[in-house]
Image (cartoon, rainbow, N blue to C red; front, side, top):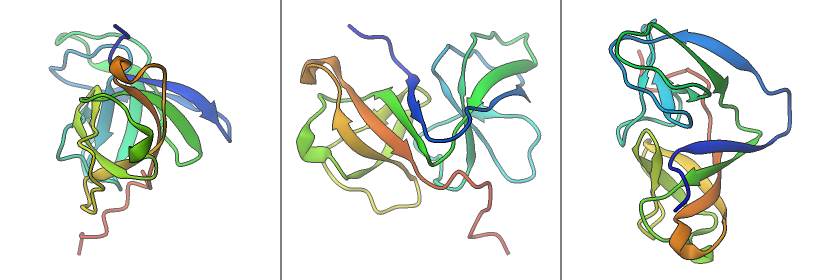
Length: 148
Protein backbone atom coordinates (compact mmCIF):
# COMPACT_ATOMS: atom_id res chain seq x y z
CA UNK A 1 0.00 0.00 0.00
CA UNK A 2 1.21 3.49 -0.81
CA UNK A 3 2.19 5.79 2.02
CA UNK A 4 -0.36 8.26 3.37
CA UNK A 5 -0.10 12.00 3.07
CA UNK A 6 0.64 14.52 0.34
CA UNK A 7 3.46 14.72 -2.18
CA UNK A 8 4.08 17.64 -4.54
CA UNK A 9 3.88 16.53 -8.17
CA UNK A 10 3.91 19.83 -10.10
CA UNK A 11 4.45 23.49 -9.23
CA UNK A 12 3.72 26.23 -11.77
CA UNK A 13 5.82 28.68 -9.78
CA UNK A 14 8.79 28.50 -7.46
CA UNK A 15 8.38 25.88 -4.75
CA UNK A 16 8.80 27.66 -1.44
CA UNK A 17 9.99 25.74 1.63
CA UNK A 18 9.38 27.51 4.92
CA UNK A 19 10.15 26.88 8.59
CA UNK A 20 7.15 27.23 10.91
CA UNK A 21 6.39 27.05 14.63
CA UNK A 22 4.58 24.00 16.05
CA UNK A 23 3.73 22.96 19.60
CA UNK A 24 2.95 19.51 21.00
CA UNK A 25 2.44 17.86 17.59
CA UNK A 26 3.48 14.52 16.16
CA UNK A 27 4.01 15.17 12.45
CA UNK A 28 4.88 12.75 9.62
CA UNK A 29 6.37 13.62 6.24
CA UNK A 30 3.43 14.44 3.95
CA UNK A 31 1.12 15.69 6.70
CA UNK A 32 -0.86 18.83 5.90
CA UNK A 33 -0.75 21.66 8.43
CA UNK A 34 -2.79 24.86 8.68
CA UNK A 35 -2.40 28.33 10.14
CA UNK A 36 -5.38 30.18 11.51
CA UNK A 37 -5.68 33.97 11.50
CA UNK A 38 -4.00 35.49 14.55
CA UNK A 39 -2.09 32.31 15.38
CA UNK A 40 1.69 31.96 15.32
CA UNK A 41 1.83 28.16 15.64
CA UNK A 42 0.70 25.76 12.93
CA UNK A 43 -1.65 22.85 13.66
CA UNK A 44 -2.48 19.60 11.89
CA UNK A 45 -5.18 20.05 9.27
CA UNK A 46 -8.53 18.34 9.79
CA UNK A 47 -12.01 18.05 8.30
CA UNK A 48 -12.66 21.53 9.77
CA UNK A 49 -9.81 23.13 7.78
CA UNK A 50 -11.17 25.87 5.54
CA UNK A 51 -10.17 26.78 2.00
CA UNK A 52 -8.71 30.20 2.87
CA UNK A 53 -6.32 28.96 5.58
CA UNK A 54 -2.59 28.99 4.83
CA UNK A 55 -1.26 25.45 4.46
CA UNK A 56 2.06 23.62 4.30
CA UNK A 57 2.99 19.99 3.69
CA UNK A 58 5.61 18.64 6.09
CA UNK A 59 8.95 17.64 4.58
CA UNK A 60 10.23 16.21 7.87
CA UNK A 61 8.89 14.23 10.81
CA UNK A 62 8.57 15.82 14.23
CA UNK A 63 7.48 14.72 17.71
CA UNK A 64 5.75 16.54 20.56
CA UNK A 65 9.03 17.97 21.89
CA UNK A 66 9.87 19.80 18.65
CA UNK A 67 8.93 23.44 18.06
CA UNK A 68 10.08 23.99 14.45
CA UNK A 69 9.04 22.23 11.25
CA UNK A 70 10.04 22.67 7.60
CA UNK A 71 7.38 22.26 4.96
CA UNK A 72 6.39 23.19 1.42
CA UNK A 73 4.11 26.22 1.23
CA UNK A 74 0.87 25.25 -0.54
CA UNK A 75 -0.19 27.51 -3.41
CA UNK A 76 -2.97 27.36 -5.98
CA UNK A 77 -0.68 26.54 -8.93
CA UNK A 78 0.50 23.21 -7.53
CA UNK A 79 -0.67 19.65 -8.15
CA UNK A 80 -0.50 17.20 -5.22
CA UNK A 81 -0.62 13.41 -5.02
CA UNK A 82 -2.69 12.88 -1.84
CA UNK A 83 -4.03 9.77 -0.17
CA UNK A 84 -7.81 9.32 -0.09
CA UNK A 85 -10.19 7.77 2.41
CA UNK A 86 -11.82 5.68 -0.35
CA UNK A 87 -10.92 4.15 -3.70
CA UNK A 88 -10.14 6.86 -6.26
CA UNK A 89 -12.39 7.24 -9.29
CA UNK A 90 -12.34 9.36 -12.44
CA UNK A 91 -16.03 10.02 -11.72
CA UNK A 92 -14.82 12.38 -8.95
CA UNK A 93 -12.67 14.52 -11.27
CA UNK A 94 -13.64 18.17 -10.82
CA UNK A 95 -15.28 17.54 -7.44
CA UNK A 96 -14.41 19.79 -4.51
CA UNK A 97 -13.49 17.77 -1.43
CA UNK A 98 -12.86 18.09 2.31
CA UNK A 99 -9.89 16.73 4.24
CA UNK A 100 -10.50 13.64 6.36
CA UNK A 101 -7.53 14.57 8.54
CA UNK A 102 -3.93 15.74 8.12
CA UNK A 103 -3.01 13.00 5.65
CA UNK A 104 -6.07 12.10 3.58
CA UNK A 105 -8.92 13.52 1.47
CA UNK A 106 -12.54 12.54 2.08
CA UNK A 107 -13.43 11.42 -1.44
CA UNK A 108 -16.97 10.29 -0.67
CA UNK A 109 -18.17 10.59 -4.27
CA UNK A 110 -20.01 13.87 -3.76
CA UNK A 111 -19.07 17.43 -4.62
CA UNK A 112 -18.69 19.52 -1.47
CA UNK A 113 -19.83 23.14 -1.65
CA UNK A 114 -18.82 24.03 1.92
CA UNK A 115 -15.99 26.34 2.97
CA UNK A 116 -14.12 23.21 4.14
CA UNK A 117 -13.80 21.98 0.52
CA UNK A 118 -10.08 22.71 0.26
CA UNK A 119 -9.13 20.66 -2.84
CA UNK A 120 -10.40 19.79 -6.31
CA UNK A 121 -9.68 16.31 -7.70
CA UNK A 122 -7.86 16.37 -11.03
CA UNK A 123 -7.37 12.62 -11.67
CA UNK A 124 -6.97 9.27 -9.92
CA UNK A 125 -3.41 7.99 -9.49
CA UNK A 126 -2.53 4.32 -9.96
CA UNK A 127 -5.00 1.52 -9.30
CA UNK A 128 -8.25 2.66 -7.66
CA UNK A 129 -7.43 0.47 -4.67
CA UNK A 130 -4.29 2.52 -3.99
CA UNK A 131 -6.62 5.27 -2.70
CA UNK A 132 -4.60 8.14 -4.19
CA UNK A 133 -5.50 10.98 -6.53
CA UNK A 134 -4.10 14.18 -7.98
CA UNK A 135 -5.50 17.34 -6.35
CA UNK A 136 -5.20 21.11 -6.48
CA UNK A 137 -5.68 23.21 -3.34
CA UNK A 138 -7.96 26.24 -3.57
CA UNK A 139 -7.23 29.75 -2.21
CA UNK A 140 -4.78 29.31 0.78
CA UNK A 141 -4.54 33.14 0.94
CA UNK A 142 -4.76 33.38 4.72
CA UNK A 143 -7.62 35.87 4.35
CA UNK A 144 -10.74 34.78 6.25
CA UNK A 145 -13.79 36.06 4.34
CA UNK A 146 -15.93 35.61 7.48
CA UNK A 147 -13.74 37.92 9.59
CA UNK A 148 -15.23 41.28 10.45
